[in-house]
Image (cartoon, rainbow, N blue to C red):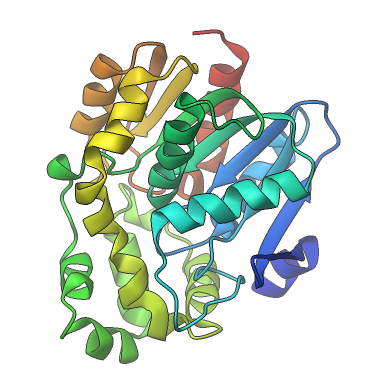
Length: 289
């Protein structure tokens, strides 16, 4: 799948004055909403769509600042604003009830949405939430060196300006379990989507989400501890960033959840082994907690 082929699958929606790239596939009665991770895009899930759309209408979008969506230079890129955009998009698309899946960065957008829903601020019926390899328990995260550098306000603009495709590929391969499964052509497409439309310039701003995970820890982890929504925890065990200890911690503290571990997969399990990840997800969605 090339970036141009992926772009042809989607369309743009104007949300709060910004163009948000969105893909909607499938005609099933049930809907699955997907929130992607950092620093990539909804493209991460392209291989999962054929099996998922047999049972769900699947809606993915690129967060503002990511992928093929707009990347304004003067913008905060708060996770709270990303939740605003997601909710406005889904409302515009007429979503009344849906399952929600979130990976990596997207898990904190999801927990912000959950915090609102717990307080009665419902915009649709949330049937279930699936969390996949996201460092919501930021105190347990094993941040990569590049993430730490991009958090430094002095060094980040320099590093992002001179970032190159080969470095991106090497960093991505390092978070695979089986590095031989990393498709270089696919990683090159991810890179091109990351750097288009001011991508390098906004990368330091995007990375500040890590600080928000500390700041809003009680709000977002508290939302999981208090929710009545069924929660699925789908976790790759060999993730060097969002380590498996997080999955066990979430499993112990969320009241209504089930846990599925994916052995011998890294931080991007839906890319590394799309078939196994998708089959596991479908089984979890079909089983009641």
